[in-house]
Image 1 (cartoon, rainbow, N blue to C red):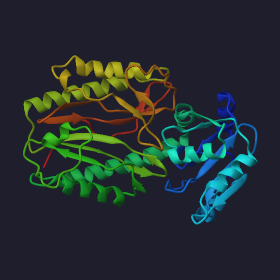
Image 2: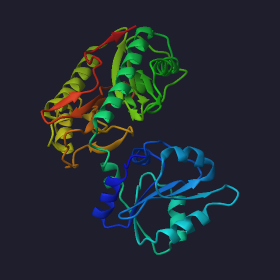
Image 3: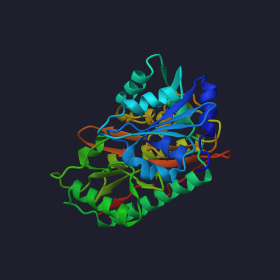
Image 4: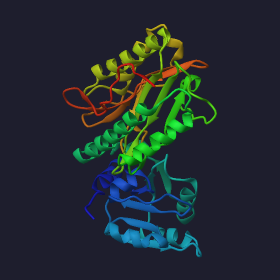
Length: 364
């Protein structure tokens, strides 16, 4: 195993803790170079500031764990015996006073198991700092993102060719999922959103089996493939058969906001500044009352990760950051429009990894 743990060690030193603890998820995969399932069995990687790493591993995972080439102590446990002895062995092997964990990933029962084994242990939430190590993407990360995005865009093009009035959202969703895997997706980045008509005004809508697409409907796709561990996250809104003047005007407003975000993006800008510009375009329009969401979020091994592109977040964004630029306007009971690109920040400005056309499109 190549040593992917050194930046976690350095972070532990910087946080003044004895160690960091990771559980299966994107940080765990980044550290080890291999992913493992998160299930009812505690599975913990402990990375001390100045000692070899330690792992608590379910016995049934030992065969896969051997492939990691882990250079540290391993305490395994079986379902029949429970995991308390493994945590007690960890406490004996590596006494700790302060431990930093992923507050948004570690589950409560793992926290309790650590405290039962080490009652005086202080557990700190270092989610921002631990996940922040993933914010600047490597060349390999960007290549994986581009692969996920490219195949997602091919899938969307294929599905749009087949959209017709009278289809259900569920039928279109099924076609999209099939197309993603046909184009080479390893998995879905998340459950796709396929929403027509009034459903498109719900930012996190669920596809309906009973609604049939009508002429003039907005049809919103928010979806992405996972490839080589990285996620695409793309939104495009089209109109089926025809588009009203209101639909054109709302679409133009959202597109102008999206383009304004790209114009202001460069290394050294803050998340606040990007959102302020993008949301400012929407607020200056006749449709300001239709704003429901912030501009976007970071993208990588997780669909939603740091940084979060919203007013009040004055985090400076360095080159190598990838974020989603996804302004939208939503009128409940009528329709919604969202346009989302995956954007790489560079020293010179930015590069949209998403290349699917953004001009208003009428299909069917």
